Length: 550
Image (cartoon, rainbow, N blue to C red; front, side):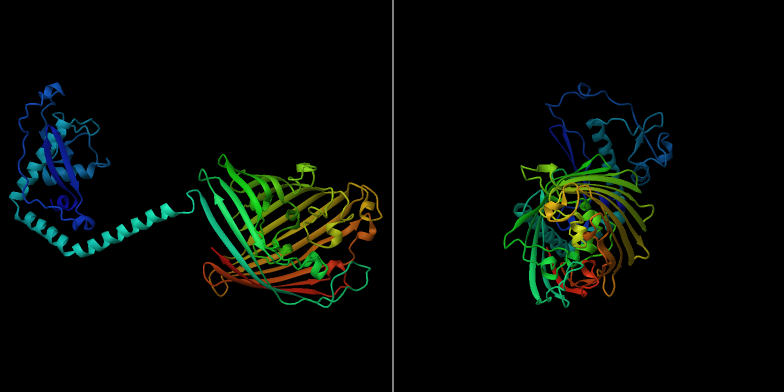
């Protein structure tokens, strides 16, 4: 009886033949609402109502039921039935359950309102009789009532807090930016400088002018709008504004010193990316982009580091693939996936369109374990004028690697890459890549002022080893190290545009979170033999980047 009264209070009324039962849970949350407690339930019978027709006009009278004293008397009730404990409690505590003459309960049988009234009335009479004849139950009721009064203040306080939260949620819903769009942003402050004696020059040239730079402070702001219409798709619009110098060719004489995340929009917010991504079935992702998409947003890069340089961010075989177009990525199994992309930098040009400059990139990714990941990439590149769109190696490496047959010579290339990553421990992960480019001159190099023939070919190689150590000194930090060879022309049918020496890239950075929204990243880049010319002095780049996210 104690358990029943703790869980349930039922006031039973019959008005104009309509039976009602109000169930009130006697929990601490509702205890402060001054619901009445009943110490004695009146024996209730059906009133005489002249408007109520004979019961046989509504439903036939059921067979007489027999009172049950033990739940095991019901032959169609087993201990594994979901309602077994409830039936056992009603039988053993209150004797409120009756069975059919054949000792069945027929729990799945539809119950009429008349049958419900009869059963409920019988149960209430039983409970009333128990209360009248058991003083301990009356004491339990008094205890419950006293607890209600004792915790009334606390319940009122909780109720007030809930009301306040409901008001705040309602305000947020009424003043939210959008029901379908999420706005995110980031701002980078960059303190940077270049170090070295001279600017880099191509092999065979006289030493370059002095490298004379000053400490510079610049910034970049990014606003990202993500919209979903189905919960599984995504429409992304990215706006950028910045005055960050990339510290590349114009400053140091080589693009081997290019920084990642450099943006110069001359003080205007410009659209940098627009794409719409949606699932195709349960295993495929499709993305359509009219502006500046890139496959590595979908393809795994398998590079564990947080790089401050253009070279260290990803394999060069991925670098030239950007622009408008489409990307499809498909999970064949849990371990094997594949993707293909077609992107062009001339999509908006009505004279060239999607058939002008383009890149086709395909990748197969294999992750046999949680620690090891491998990727095999093939790319096809073409540009009628590499200088005006995207060059062969995506602005990584020497000038000869970027423009093996001249900056304005139509050039195509078949490219191959292997990437890997391996997680040694929960903190230490290493990665790396090897890339090979096989460009072909699709026009006469003389258009670029280069002495050569159409159909000339070249070999370009690049490699790198990366390492990432997280949570060093503080949770959320990341120490990144990169050593590698930027793209170098190892063979060229045009001998004058073949690199003679091997350049080396060293990079160290440490990303430190001040809190969840502010990060400080000091880093340093050192280039040995810039422009693949051992006569050039080494060049260093120092950077301290502070990132604010919201």
